[in-house]
Length: 431
Ligand code: GLU
Image 1 (cartoon, rainbow, N blue to C red):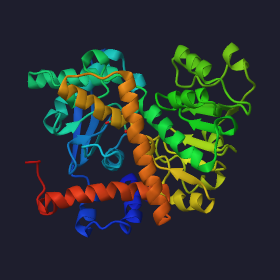
Image 2 (tube, rainbow, N blue to C red; image 1 turned 90 degrees about the horizontal axis):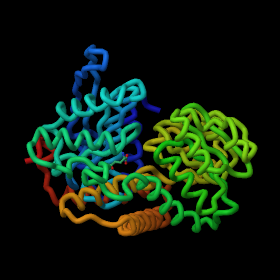
Image 3 (cartoon, rainbow, N blue to C red; image 1 turned 135 degrees about the vertical axis):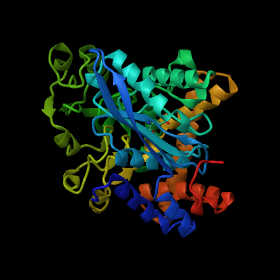
């Protein structure tokens, strides 16, 4: 694999190119992010000291609409990572036919080392630094790894203060009290669930016999594990960044969620005490979880979990990418040779941004939907696009990932053609 995450992400574009009639100029343009902003954010810490944090916002492409994408708080955040995540957002929004381009942001830090007040000052400072670069019609923020509705609320408020008017449409995933949408919290997991349920019957896989391992027990992985368990699938293994647990008979997911919430620690998936004695289990490492002999493997944590090094160990027959970029391109061929079906991130985890789109629509119209309406529209979108990508994959005899990129590129190509050629020779702000 290339050292650059973005270069690695770009190889998937290369694979899809030969199946689309989009100009080479347009493809060339799509290999590079349109705008990348790097900022330093001064934060007054609780002890009175001043600390400077590094932040980024990248608008990868805005041919199909304003930039759209989350903000990640994580120690590994780098410009390369944020550019790759913005690249994936571009294709994700096109796959779901949302009127958005792709963007992403991030701050390099371990959020668990900051107090709540420090986090608020940092989040507001980030908006101070990037305010000229974002807006409801320019680039719209959302939660990502280790950010949540509370952080989005601070960001929306700060942007509104700077602009001297309430501007809910600049951030999605906000608290309901600030114009958030019902159903946004669990939307990524719910969207993945709808896609999984549309795909599995094609392979004759039915819930009670189908075993599942989920890597990542955060706000997406844990919710999806519970949705799958409730639907009757046998969730046999879950893990978080500290490690995981495995039980052949299946795990009691709601209890593990409760246990993890109560202990507040990210390492709480480990079982101690009454809850986990309900069923016998083994402690497994994240690597062991990835290599379990299960039907379905769901990486729902971070990028680059399955690489050339460990792809050969994978025994699952179906992988659903709930994280962004969990499989490095170097692993693609190995997994293909093992006849493993990979269902790609830009489709499977698109439920979050789809409900973000619904939130943005609700903010602009001022009319708010019920949970039933949100979920029904989400299901309709997820199932429609899943079926279309499935058809492309069958017709062209190509993997689902390539089919998803073909689907997205066709839409991007149409928009690029409609727009003319100015973007190929002028680089500047959207006029
Ligand atoms: N961070 C999420 C993603 O990677 C959601 C983005 C959004 O809602 O804009 O898809």
